[in-house]
Structure formats: structure tokens, C-alpha cells
Image 1 (cartoon, rainbow, N blue to C red):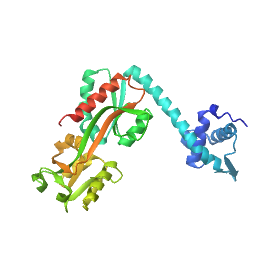
Image 2: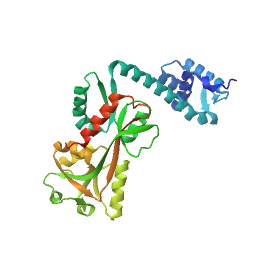
Image 3: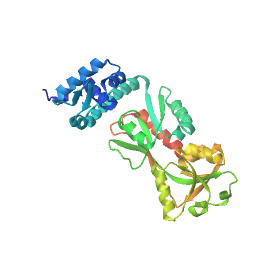
Image 4: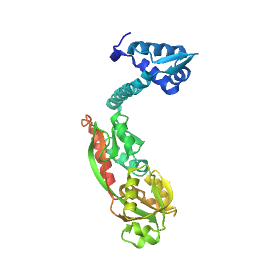
Length: 303
């Protein structure tokens, strides 16, 4: 059997990965848009290429051997790399022809800030085409690295290597409340001021929520949480509706104030560092650099 795994065709790896993830050649064939016999043939060719028997065949069913599970992550990584190359080639082809720039931002900024940012950018670059995607900071890092997007807003420090921050900005957590709320009389809101106040907080899975929870624990404060949401804009809308008080990112909240709420500093101070990032080898992309600067300038501006 051949062990020259470096020359394994991509379609064989895709067939192996599909069978492993879907559990049968029938399901894998449906996923890949091939016939069952074609998938079985590709699977046999893949086993021959790696020099291992990866499946036990019993009564027409495939049972993965331990070697199959051992190779699964490597196959998935190689498939993702090939997909990344395809996307990069597509972007280069589209970019040179249409000056396409893809940018990833949090959902709230996509709604509240990006229309003005893109409008201003396109006045300066009338030939540009901008695609805006809504993503979390973690998703944005992965999307930049895989070249699904050219630039995106991330938290600093970043979790992944291979990408760099080209524009930076800082923010703080603030307390927002409905208009005419009793807390409005305060110059700043501390944990002790929130005793028995209904709170609308960002979901527990978010890093910033963990920082808020640490601040609560430090002063032995037990919050009265009535709702959890997963976007600052949603928290702002709930507060404006009078459902409670929230603690959110000031840079985003400032661009939602038209919803109708009041902002006060939150104590203890929770500082956040952000940036607009791109892959390490993309500094030659002048349009992306200009859009990154336009975006950060808009975030820093008062709403």
C-alpha cells in the first residue's frame, strides 16, 4: 500500500471526513452530492493511500477503527486549509476586479455604526465594495485567520496567532438605565447601588460577563438578574423598554442612545482593550487599512 500521504487527493479526504461525521456512506453521499458507490470508492482509495484499514465492514455497515479517529483531526485540518486557499483565491480574484473588502463587527455595531462608516468610506473610495458580517470577537479571530474576512473587531489580547491588530481603541463598562430611573441622580453607579435592582446582563459565556461577575463577587454583591442577552444592542433595547438596568460596553452603548436610556460610569472600573485586526501578511491591502482607520475613528467619536 502507498504511504505517500502528501499526494492524497482532497476529494478522498472529504469522503473520509464526511463518512466519519455523518456515520454512513449514504449520508456522506448526500452531503457531498455524490453517489454512494462514488463515496465508497473514494473511501477505499483513501485507505489505500494512507496504508491503513480504517473501517471494519460488517453486514453492509462501516465501523471506524481507532486509526480512523486518530486521523480525523488531521484530515479536517487539511480540508479547512484547502477551503482557506480557495477562499483566498476567490477574494484575490474578486478583490482585484471589484475592490471587495469584508469586515466583521459585533451585531450591534453592524446595525448602529456601520451604515455611516461604510457611507463615509465609499465617498472616499467609490470603487470599493464592502461586505459586513456580524460576528463575536472569537468568531472574528477565526474568520480573519481563515480569510473569510479581511478585517474585524477583536478583543486584545487575542487568542490566536497569525493575525495582528492594526488599529486600537479602549472602552469601559458603563451602567445604563431607563430615563427617569432613580439611579440617574448618581454621578457613578457602584455594585452597592444595584441592590435589588432588576439587571439585564450579557450572557455568562462572554468574557466580559465573567469580569462583571468577578467585580460582584469581590464586594460580595448578589445581583438580581432578570434577563440574559447576547448582544449589547439587545441589552440597550431592553433597558430602554424599562425592563431593568444593564452593564455594557460604553463604545457600543454610546451608538445606541437613540433608543432612549441614560449612561453612567460603573464602579469598580472595568477597562476593555479592542482593535481592528487582519492577517499578518495583509498590510499591503491599502483599502482594508483605510476601512480599519475609518471604523476606529467612528467608534472613538461621540455618538
